[in-house]
Image 1 (cartoon, rainbow, N blue to C red):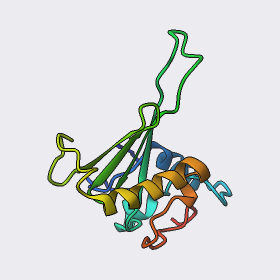
Image 2: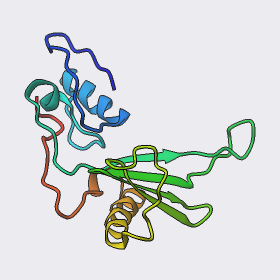
Image 3: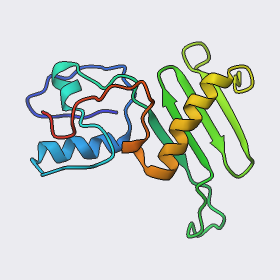
Length: 150
């Protein structure tokens, strides 16, 4: 993601972020009173290199049943945590697990050979599906910067 903020020196960061983080960050910059929002305020990362440890990042892919786009599905969901990525295809009832540090092209599905890792990511993804991003944290995660922190 590229973001330009007056007074903040441009840099490159390797952390995985999502577009909802831009919303949280822009609300903080606008000095909006925010108490609960999905996404992470990126200002601590941009100004002090602080970022939540073990933060999951979620993806949803919508398939459209009609050319009009009015009838869509929510059947592809994914979570990225550390070097791992789990993809669940709810329509087909299948899952894929990839070690992105060793397989960035996602060519080798490790779902069957890493059941413990798959279970951890499935629990995080299931919490996201049922409760939203703010509740979907791995058990071992420490809290990162608050949304309103600058």
